Length: 125
Image (cartoon, rainbow, N blue to C red):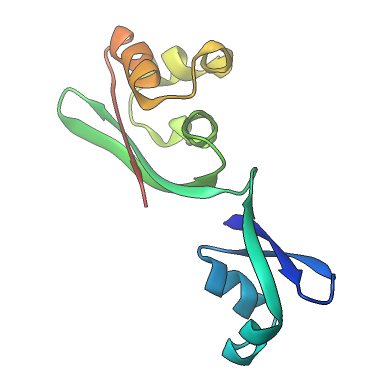
């Protein structure tokens, strides 16, 4: 979920969470009537996003997971590689520290998986 700083006209600030600004307000218990007292809403860094992550080995999907994480790299790191069927894949992925050294962009991460004969599919939801 994304985090939002909600600033009211009378100077009070609150932090709300939701997929949208409206949902963040609703999650704090406010309805449409509260908009008149609202100054502004600002999205804060560090919220989480939802990703669909799947690993494909020789055109066979080994597992699809919906993962919440702030970045693509962190979503891939949270992926449960141990649900896969082959021991070889588990051995290749067991030490995932190499992911820490990658840039946080999908292309770099996919290229690293390609080098160990796996295709990585990631889609932001």
